[in-house]
Length: 230
Image (cartoon, rainbow, N blue to C red):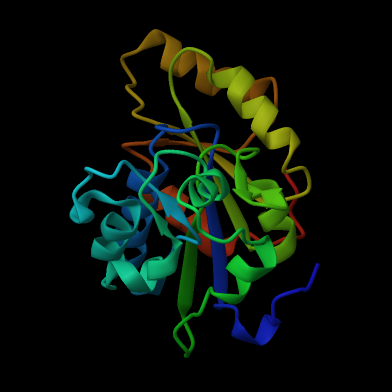
């Protein structure tokens, strides 16, 4: 598989992935973009491909939400021909719509970034880590192709969290990884028990949102591929 040109990569490249659908990847990605902008970083967001229900308002798509946070048009965040108005994984949605199949390399080539120093580029993927992202691979494959500086793995804070995080992280071994427990409530005994287990038993780096947005931004700008995680 062809490798992207390193010269075109942002100063920092962050991939936001999820343990599944509806865990809040877009919300966490947007919160991270806003926090980074407030801290003085230049940011850009990219969604390699997005699929959605045909009756969804354009302003509610992932590309629109991320673009509002990064200050970019939705069609810059996700190029127009990668919008698939069918609620399936992107390559399946493309097939359902009668559109051409596509590869991870094609998605990678389409990730164009603003020039200049001090840029944090954020890529939000689709579905879970092992959900199809292109005809020839998933999010884990895209991460290996792009070699980002940090991977943010978003999980729900409630029931099923530990299994979902372990299963997803197993596909991302060796990546600079932080787990984000989304919709976290400190007063919820299960949420806190999940956080403690992931940290103390499994050795993950864990932040919670709302609450740890600043810590998440620090990880995104300081993590390197020399730090592996569990």
